[in-house]
Image (cartoon, rainbow, N blue to C red; front, side, top):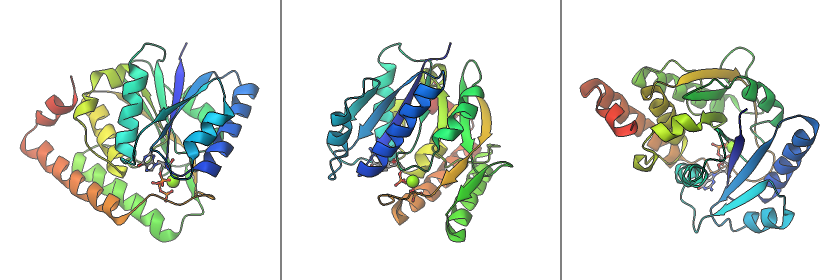
Length: 250
Ligand SMILES: Nc1nc2c(ncn2[C@@H]2O[C@H](COP(=O)(O)OP(=O)(O)OP(=O)(O)O)[C@@H](O)[C@H]2O)c(=O)[nH]1
Ligand SMILES: [Mg+2]
């Protein structure tokens, strides 16, 4: 029986996180799914953490961090916290802003494979879609994945998406504390590390919905980071085969 925890990073998501927790609560009640949630908040000025705290939901925990350190750092702190004990078999990662739909969770849960595994919610395969994104943003995301696929030689179709399920077995095999990527490139780095660790990867089509509340934390710096890092990783993989495996895999 899988024991699941959903990690949700938040930075100024006061409205969205309440809506998402409400949807997760209904889903929990209606389905036989059992899971806990950890909200990882970077001291959001809009009081996201205090709002979550006040909800006092017994299956929701809060990980308070002192300052905004980027998505990658927030997730790594969440992983470290959850991996401290043996409560879970799988860790789900999900954005707070409503872009990752609770409705897609059953298919994601059903697709989990035993052993070292990564399950990827994927926009860019048949059955997957994006709602309310301008053409320019769709092109950027598709081009980003295409470039990363080519540079890193990984045959997956959504390398920048953050709706995923990692098995604890996989995460325990990785040197998470040696990872440094911050923005989208955190997602690319994790996919690459999973590949190097020989994880089974399964892609599940999802519908990605543009956020309605709050503001995006996406920036030019995050796009540039992803581009530069992916190029560096791609070159390293070609010039020094196995060095990256030693870096990422225990
Ligand atoms: N804890 C923490 N969470 C963050 C940080 N940056 C982004 N997040 C959260 O990570 C998730 C994804 O961030 P978004 O701003 O939605 O970025 P995005 O989904 O890549 O971009 P959009 O599609 O424009 O929304 C959201 O739940 C954010 O609140 C951060 O520095 N710290
Ligand atoms: Mg978003």
